[in-house]
Image 1 (cartoon, rainbow, N blue to C red):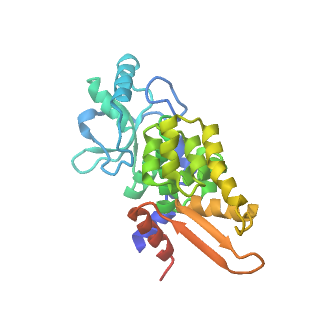
Image 2: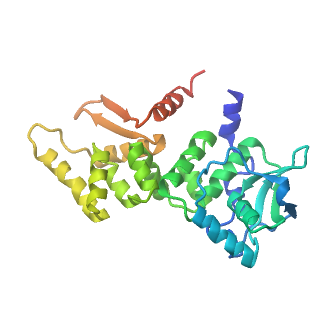
Image 3: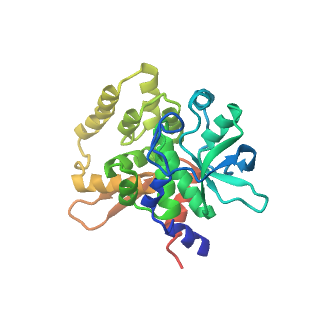
Length: 298
């Protein structure tokens, strides 16, 4: 319980303070950023990757491009490393791609900023650095926001202020995580854009519609029209409940974004009671939901 509370507190420095060390997008090598300058040059063989790095995919083409850039211009934006252990080995907090590309470029050392971060702080910085990457797909970005909220207790407003992204952007990205994993994979693989995915979030059968969108190569506008058709057909049937008011829909969206799962509110007209249903797309999401619901006990 103590460890969980420690994680919830996050960095004592505050999330916004991290941005002084973390480069803006597209500053891996070729563009000088306004971030902090390097503390020292560290031999490559004295550096190891972070085993808890939240980003697992390093596209070879992008690594090759970065390697060429480093050969031509060197590493302009320093890596962020954690203080060395007893053997004098530093651990990467942010900049693993630069480290890998520097190895491929046969460099012997890299510029680095050295910080005395705890395990919890290392993960938080790594997540923020990944979110700032321009080439991050929408699902990876949304997963980063959810980690910041669940592991460190940051609110959407706090993340918005720290990262310079609108509250609505963060909420919309989080809603993508309510989609079935197969549809999320389509977004991550580039078969569907974030615009397509947002249109599918409100449907009862997003997977079937997603497959149709991909098969027919529909645009975002065409996808939105496809989603509206079954909704109109349902509304035309007699005996159906009245359309939900804007406040109820907004509350559904907020709950869905906060939980990372599809939430539905059915409030009895004229009454005080109703039903809240939450749809999970995997057993992992069910575990997350159970943890959220029980975290306040004791």
